[in-house]
Length: 161
Image (cartoon, rainbow, N blue to C red; front, side):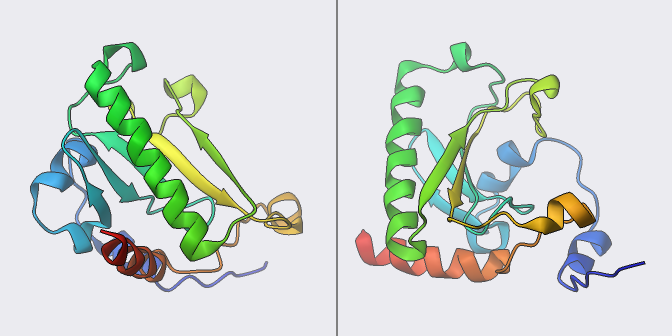
């Protein structure tokens, strides 16, 4: 049996499990750094994905609890896309990816981990960022801690504003 050590995961394992919608609750807490909230706009905000596919995996979400794309107002749609553009430019500046995956997972069958609260995933991609580990070992290796990525992005974002 092979072991892959990830000591930072113990924090999640020991944390109390919260009921409700984290995309509704976390922006209200006024603890953005603790909650990995990178940016707050008028209608939408950006939060780091705590279980990223790659370093820099962000989620852009409306504050309003909306589950379907067609339920978003025009103002929410516009801000969501403008914020996504801003985040792509930030990720290009800080992390220099070779490309991006952007997408919504609408409904459980489509892979939605958070049903009922729409959010846009922004995943930076690098040439060669996939390797044998997912195929052979059913393991994805994320080479940078989420908090380290958050700090680097936050510093660069504050210098842009």
